Image (cartoon, rainbow, N blue to C red; front, side):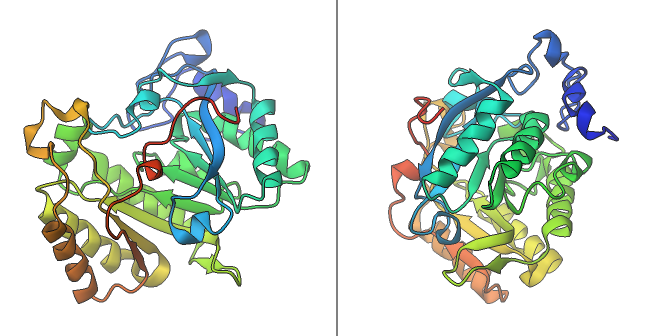
Length: 306
């Protein structure tokens, strides 16, 4: 993908921004696999207190939730925006203004949630807002079903990457996200993220300024795949990244067709994974204790701040 800056929006003409390669003519109004055309749609822009401590800090992360998603997990906890049924159409100029408004609210960073299918708009908005005084880190918060060459367009745009690594087993990724090749793309994409931003750097208050935090949310009944993921991350990246192990999986109505995951994670499952993580020598990490705040993963998508 060799688009010049002025050509970025042409990437919507025959869309291959994500591994789905759906070739949707998004600039002509056709919606891609992501459920969106080339019109920029945002569902929420507000301070968010429930990310990892080094992201949310004491003042909050300036989260911008984009509508649509190229992964489409059956258990999605933000399904009403992932399926493109929530959000407001805005211009790139308005997105740039939103970034500055969140900075004025003292956000520690700008946190772009599910941004992959709007990369051309994001590049333009970040460049514009930086010219107008934006000076806090940009967080690219993704499910990781990405193309490394598209991520390459974000070199110098993103300061922090917050990717998921959902699955290693291709049968599991095919069953729950309809992408048998998930790990192939996600692993290469995370490598590209680490190449771009390097090791984690924090300010004097412990707020992350640049680096990669890889998230893994456990699914019920798939402890072994979770262990394989944690081991892979440790063996591949060592101390270059932080790993965030999440127990917040919540079975909503959309998983009734998959009864094997229609339950929460047990304390025993999560404790087993944490003990394994410690046993293989991982020190740079985050875990979740007790009942997870519902706000942390199912905020109200009422177009606040948009």
